Image 1 (cartoon, rainbow, N blue to C red):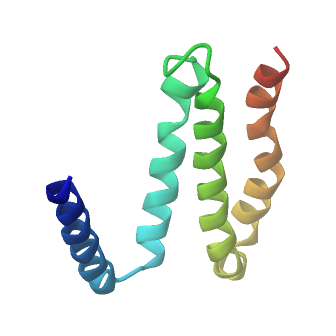
Image 2: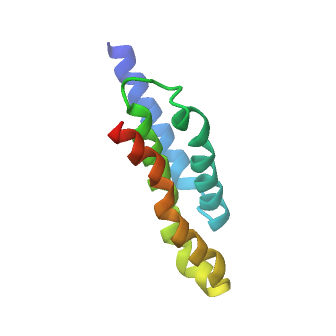
Image 3: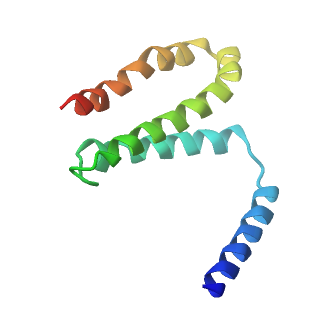
Length: 106
């Protein structure tokens, strides 16, 4: 147990050191949002992950919420540059929850 405990401490220190050196740019945020949304369609929507636990719906929601948070952080800059994409994303964001909400009822 001590080995696992020490490994956890070492990994936490390493993560902390790495996080402090990361430069968070809008491009990095956007890439993260795209990665989150690209992870959603296949296993989560097709119910491959765990057919009966519905954990995949929680994962789906978490990925979408993460992408929405990134969008909310970048939205003011996006609106300044070009308001049309920002408006389109806002209008379509509610639609993304239609499928998981329908699955919850089933």
